[in-house]
Amino acid sequence: MLHVRRQAAGERTAVPEAAGVYAHVVRGEVRLGGEELGAGDSARITRARGLELVAVRDAEVLVWAFGAA
Image 1 (cartoon, rainbow, N blue to C red):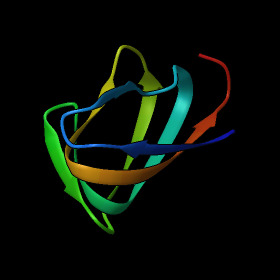
Image 2: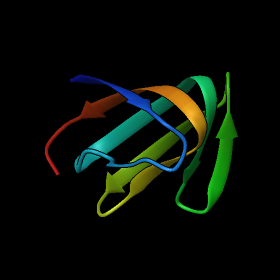
Image 3: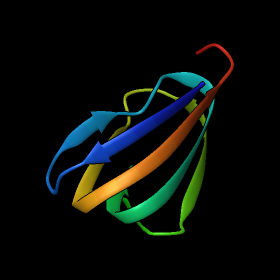
Image 4: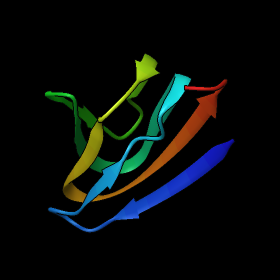
């Protein structure tokens, strides 16, 4: 399932709990699990639980969730 996250600076949103998650930063800058990601960056996550995306600057992120948590 595809989720589109549009966040203002400082805004937080949960990463879907799933067996696999792929996140791609379209614009802006976010923090994900202690790592900062900018436009064009992506992250592949396995067994995502309790993670948050935090917008460092206004951001748009595409988040794909695969499989059951």
